[in-house]
Length: 326
Picture 1 (cartoon, helix red, strand yellow):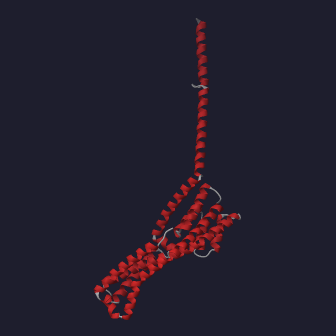
Picture 2 (picture 1 turned 180 degrees about the horizontal axis):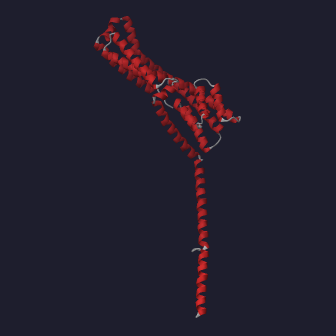
Picture 3 (picture 1 turned 90 degrees about the vertical axis):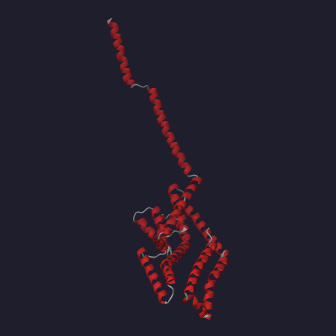
């Protein structure tokens, strides 16, 4: 009896020790789990590598460029709508409050002059509205377009400077300094502000975004997109900027061709738009009493106001017809 009891106890002891050493699971199962974990890690690394390779394909870059263009277009529209950005694009250092004060002074002055001249109050009110709301904004828009045109004309030369600087071993920041120092206004001052922004710790993308807010031109938008794509995907920056310079010069050549082809339509629109006021001025010189009724009689003043409104609509329609976008 005792040998049987001893054998049972020995069997239980050996089984318990084996269970503790094995840990409730066999080594084969643990090896399978470790292999599966390693395989999952390899699959994740392979998936990441495939995603990175897919992001560097021409199709992915094309999609990324399209997204960048759409985002830049939205930012450009917002920048053109705000008064502060329009003042900055025109190169004016005045604030919005000063602009509104100047507009109000012009409107009040136009109203007083019209009333002193004996015009009808409705006509005087229309003149005040034109001088308070229309004239200042037209001047700001005219100055802004003129300044952006100068910027666009000189910008391909700035891109060429960056390309030659990169090929000769200079960093991009030094190329910006050369452009800021050597280029004429408004290109030089804008790049000087870009260099100052980089000097205070801004990233290149942030500094370019601020520059685009001050100068919302298509050329600068393309340059910003090229820099952003190059920073994300890598590549030869000199080659990319060289291609951009070629594209910008081709766009300028196309603009000049369109201007030459549409010169006849522009001249016709100018003649048609200026014909009524010119005829009115000539008749006023030859027969002042005949045209004087339009200014002294209330019915004539209303007719002048209606004619001015219709002339404005006609000029805007002709401008829409001869304004070609490319």
